Amino acid sequence: MNIEVRSMKNAAELALAEVFASAKATLPGNGAVAALREAAFRRFEVEGLPHRRIEQWKYTDLRAMLGEAKPLASAPGATAKTQARDAGALLADMGARRLVFADGAFVPELSDVTALEAGLTIRSMAEALAAGDPLVAAHLGKVVDGDGVVALNTALMGDGAMIHVAAGATVERPIHLVFFAGDDRPASLFTRSLVVIEKGARVMLVESHEGGTEHQINTVLEFVVGDDAHVDHVKLTGGGSGVVHVSSLMASIGAHARFNAFTFNTSAAVVRNQLFLRFDGEGTVAGIRGASLLKGKQHADTTVVVDHVARGCLSREMFKMVLDESSRGVFQGKITVRQKAQKTDARMMTQALLLSDECEADHKPELEIFADDVQCGHGATTGALDDDLKFYLMARGIPRKEAEALLVQAFVGEAIEGIEHAGLRDALMDSVVAWLRARAG
Image 1 (cartoon, rainbow, N blue to C red):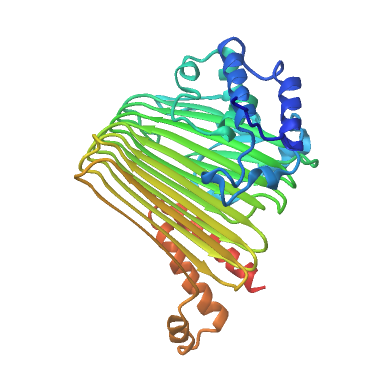
Image 2: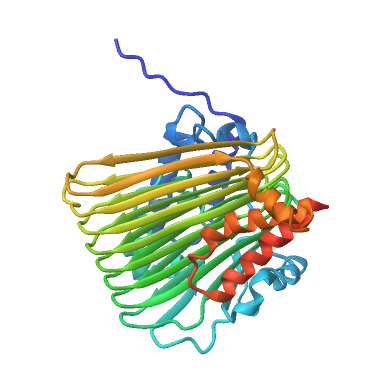
């Protein structure tokens, strides 16, 4: 006799089921989109919220961390829109094209969608879903297979950006997606964006997430990158001390392309950035980097899965964590090299700098190799500031706190210097300096 074992639903999972049942009729999209939502929620019902018995989530027990699910965010009011106007100020000098989303909804009056460069098309995801956009039908939810959290986003996705860059087009100005949570009451946000870059095109996309009190944020970004394209993506995660932020980036990358991604975390209570990248074409070069600066009881988890399907691709991963007080940093990285992906060159490094005795760093790098003509490697280090280097600086008249700050800047700067945009590099280093100043009191 076979007995089917099912886990008991917790309060958050039961509440999410009620939210979907009551909201699905009002969410954008009919027909195929509605069917996609229904199938995605059926998958989430089976898998549930991820917990520590799932290997990929063993360090970030989302089921326990959520406790209860917040109601869906309502349409942004005048106050939220006013606050969103000033969001993303750190990147104000980039000259970027801003697309502003307040409480998960696109705000056209705060966004720059006029005089678009040749080959660039932008519309809100809610509009694209409602209109049955052919790019949505072709790619949404089909780029890379995600997990139960991505399925939940698919079921409840509201708004986001739908961006298309035509073949051969170069988008000179960076595109800045500004996501601001301004609702005074705790709420859930499910934003979804799709970016399709055709052959030979070039674009830089920046995401910044700010605001929120005890908000629960589930955001997904899908990239479809054509052959010979060049894409840079940078994500900055902020938020209040009670915010739980889960982000999923999924990318399918063509041949002879360049793909760079960088994640940067300085606030929010719990952050989980997961990246699923698949190299479908040969000769592609990718740089995947990130940095987290954590304090208090903050928890940041970066999980990266790189799938080398085609031959001759090169990937470099570097992630830095600076941990203070009782914070916890997690890095999980997996590089898979398929049997036909000969001549792969893939290397991964994760490093944690501990500034207190109470903080914790967890590293789990993995290699899964099915080809025999490859160069692959991974490494992980954890340690405190180098006393000899600190003494060297202090012996030259630099106060202890300033000496420590200089060493931290140098540590984080190794990851940040891989960003091609000089203005963005400077802005992120300014953010590091501000974090260090706040730490110094």
